[in-house]
Structure formats: C-alpha cells, structure tokens
Image (cartoon, rainbow, N blue to C red):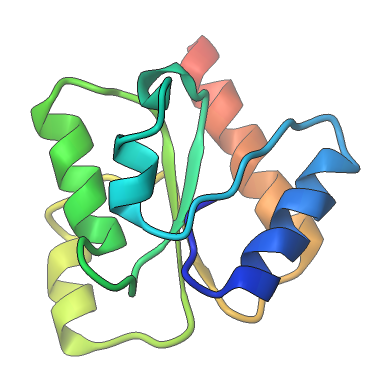
Length: 117
C-alpha cells in the first residue's frame, strides 16, 4: 500500500492484514521502489496523487522495467490529466475515495485471478 496519508495507509494495511492478505505500507513511490524486495509483491495498491513520483508514474516505471505485477490505483478526485493518462496505462482497478473495504478486496481478488490466467 503506497499512500502519503499515514492514517489512511495504516488503516488499509491493518484492514488487509485482518483478511487473508499480507500488506506493507510505504509513504511514497520512491520509498517502495527502494525497498529491499520491491519486485516480490503480488499486487500494488497506490494512491495516484503522491509527492514526487505519482502512482501513474510508478505504474509506467514498473511496466518499462518489465514488472507485470497488478496495480490498483486509488484517488480522491478525477482530473482531466488523470482521465487522459488512464487510457495509456493498465491498472487492474481504479478506486475512488471513499471506497468500501469490499471494493478493495474485490480489486485484489481480481488482481490475483488475473495472475493465474
């Protein structure tokens, strides 16, 4: 889970930890990329609007480095820039804040199902 909003990030990590999913939290895309095993995650959930590298920039970087890990993007608001860029990237889901825990779980399950295909 990558989000610069610490309480939100902590809540989602806790939520996912209470289900069948293990989760770690990162405050930025750069922190995630520099983590010890960034390429070992089965799914990435990231906010789009981050300081520094955006969630969309992170997704593009992963794809350019041949990482096929599913990415779930989250945002609090849609912008024309975001709408234009969503057409050129391939997130497994886009969640608009606020979203339900069930919506997040459904996206993660979709990501895992896509990996098995």
